[in-house]
Image 1 (cartoon, protein in one colour):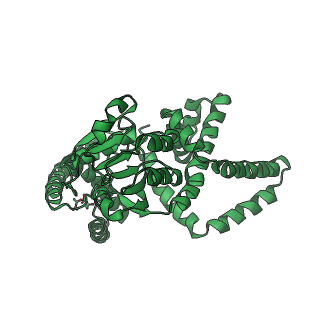
Image 2 (image 1 turned 45 degrees about the horizontal axis):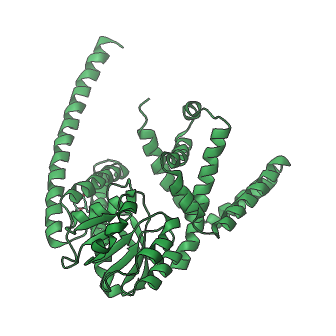
Image 3 (image 1 turned 120 degrees about the vertical axis):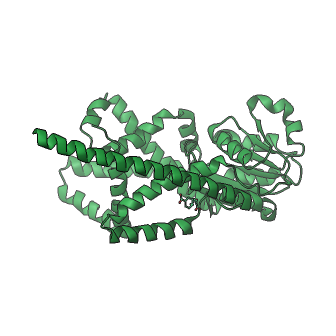
Length: 379
Ligand SMILES: C=C(O[C@@H]1C=C(C(=O)O)C=C[C@H]1O)C(=O)O
């Protein structure tokens, strides 16, 4: 580099640094305004997540960006990241308590990770929360006395027997709910054990979400929806989207969404382990898509085997879904063994037609994800 080039670069980089510092001041200003919005919402009991406001704001900024010769996707990416930050800061203010008259809340299995998330959210909303765990059953009678909500969040395998054996004497008015990732059997157990209001919930997220904004919670109605309407409204104020579902339909979907998916990720990991693959080498030669895939598989093994065993073993019918997967794998392997390239392409096109417009949608979505994986690289 010549001296002149060095000097020019230095000058321009100084200007960029100063623009970035100004951006930082603006970010501080925005965060302060968002915190004020949080206070107003808290007082008025409005949800943390306002999709209509977000859509309108993004639309306006995109148009302005275009007029200024800035890629509209750039401002959209930046704003979406800022909005994620907003959900966190609004959360700190706490939430409106929808049902101030409610007695205390007992979370059975409250030391579990998801139990803790819900305990925190209820506490941030002004409820008195008591946690009941394995060793606390001696005090259970006292804890249930006067409770307004009992929320069961124990491992799937223990859920139904715990409900039937331990929750037969709740106050009549108390809402009984669970967070289990299957819904049919726990809902039946709750309805048969408790005379009062019953609702099944399945939060479609793990304990590391940070905020519930935009997260999905599946709701399977049991009985007495007028008595637990406040709970659904409360979850809505936390920013989550409630999706009502029939328990049988939900459970059927979970055989593919959870059991089969997790099982194949498990086998993927098992295979890498047995093949003694060198992860550093795999990463070295990974494009973002492979890195993303490896991250999705690898994150399983940062969690507890018991959790995944619970999910995979929860429904007997999942065995059929997983066996079908194996059959299809075998058939496809046969194409490889026999060198049937044309057969492979034929199957490929069959699947491609079946995906229809979704494949284009997924291509676009994954492009954005892959770009952010690439952005995170520093070398
Ligand atoms: C700040 C607000 O809360 C959330 C965050 C937003 C933001 O960061 O701009 C916009 C909409 C809401 O989802 C708001 O409602 O204005």
